[in-house]
Length: 176
Length: 264
Image 1 (tube, rainbow over the protein chains, first blue to last red):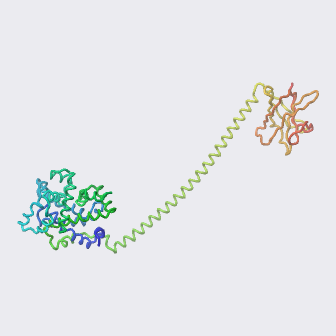
Image 2 (image 1 turned 45 degrees about the horizontal axis):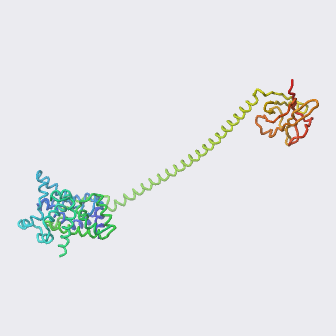
Image 3 (image 1 turned 30 degrees about the vertical axis):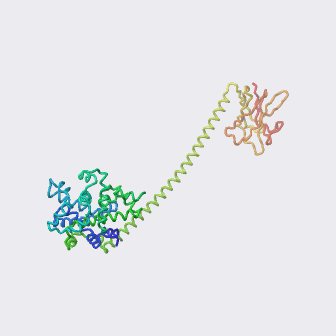
């Protein structure tokens, strides 16, 4: 069954189709939430809430909103950022822009994390820090191009091309 | 469009990140449908992001979906049997509504048609009334002009009395000597029988000399029975006889209808 058919069935409240989508994307959503929230147990709860929300708002999605994954990614990021905001009123912005994802890969090791550090390292092999930072801000934290440019102190015009070359590197790494 | 250049711009990566405006997103989708290469590129980028986000997951617990399953509210209208009922009911309602609508539409069409032809009728009537007014106006203008001519200072009026052929008959001659014109008021003459015309004569006495000055043509059709004729003669009297159609060279005296002298 192709993705469009699956999404269309899910929008008609087909539970089996929704379960397929959950299987396809729940790990990714959890990965994004945990990158922001930094608490695997809490992240799993939020992830569950996000999927319930996706189910309830199924009909809000249409292709004008872009890819289906992009749509649920956005819902997940907003839920995670809400959590961050409620936990640390003053510092949530600072916490959000702190680069946990890549810089702390070693820390994950130390924390005996459940994260597949080896796999992630392979994926990010050869990527410069400015790449991993940018990818984290754009895909995990939901920064706009302008916000990312301000955060990294680079021109907005550079964001698109740099991001493309960073993603290309990851695609190369996936082949090996 | 240069597909390679478009891909190289990095816009597709932003599209997957959800970082484009609605318009830009729609543009990307439009190109993705048009150029399969762009669609492929989008899917590859998404694949990389999926791989990366999955790599960042601390690991989903195995019964994760079961934990949310009981929170998924089934939406009742999608239950098959209820759905069928709802469909048939709404179907009937739909058909009924469209029938009412169609009948209403047809009725309005008929009404409109009726009004249209009423308007046409009224317009025609209006035109004919306007024509009538115009005719009457022209008639009045003609009558006024005639009246003015009869009232002219240089016009003398000669009364013609009935003769043996028709004692009841009479006529009047308005003679304008300045312009050599006479107006014959033949109101008092009977309508001539078919095939006959009245002929007007200018008469001189001693010896009696009649000179024809014209026919009262189209007698029946002339509404006010006033006829205009040329009279260059130095007339002493006027007479009107009934002559065969087209007139005669000399008057038929036993058919003399009216006669009157100009002098005192």
